Image 1 (cartoon, rainbow, N blue to C red):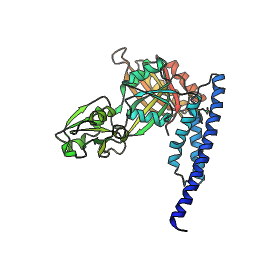
Image 2: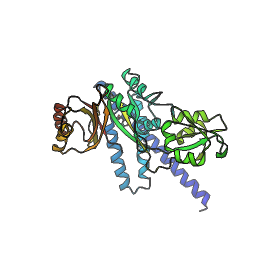
Image 3: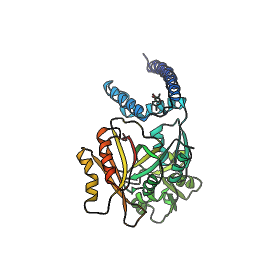
Image 4: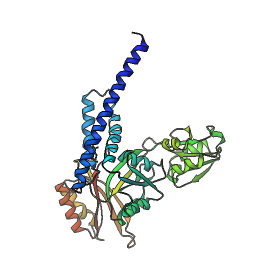
Length: 361
Ligand SMILES: C=C(O[C@@H]1C=C(C(=O)O)C=C[C@H]1O)C(=O)O
């Protein structure tokens, strides 16, 4: 058979499969709608992260058994959008994030909820919290730490002050690119970016653009917007920002850090159910006496609970008084976690659970 005929035959088969997939997607959405009706009748939350996580895990495992001709790495992104779209037929959920569009926080929100939610860009981390408290958003996404630049202290402080819960976490690999409308790096005299992004690219910028003026703006997305009309300007931002603002990528990955990751928190009003692979975050203070921190953490050790992180912040109530942000493995619905935290609460002058949520993939 000549190759053109063969190509046509193969493409016809692909067309038929696509139609089958689409029919099945419609059937799937119809079932999700029925689930949605039952949830509304019984006042249950529309978004069920534990169920979504179980679906991803089951399908990734099945795909490996099927021989992985379709790449297993693609299973989650494809099904994330399928689930996001099916969920939106039950009810549209609103997600506030640190904007504008094309920030890394926006990408984290998409990675967690998919495209089919109402994304609400706001201009400060505090506004993300405010949108939820004022019931203008169901969830929010905020950055909390970066492997190069460290903790976003402001986010931690807001978690203490607001009556909200951490309902999830997202880890995103950060790649920072130099972009502009002018592809010639020698003609760039100004570089815009967020303070953290400029710091992460310090070495490259010093070597390659030693005379350029480095200008801090609120976000990498804002930087891309600033560079879009100026032939002598460039921005340090994400690939998504280059796409949205129509910029040319002049040099890829100028942050040069192999391990540049940012962790984001998803915040909401309710603690999601346990998935079996969860994390719990809580804060506490200690009495000002010998061995206080040791004694407070002892119940974790006794109940065999792994502490994955501890971070101290000034309490801002008294000088040299601290609160400790702590992450442990497990969910507050796990018996030993519940017991250990109860004991810890009894010892601590101040204690608050910030959330139990599925660990990031
Ligand atoms: C359909 C449901 O609602 C949402 C959509 C899901 C899906 O499309 O599979 C899964 C969990 C929920 O976030 C459900 O709860 O089962």
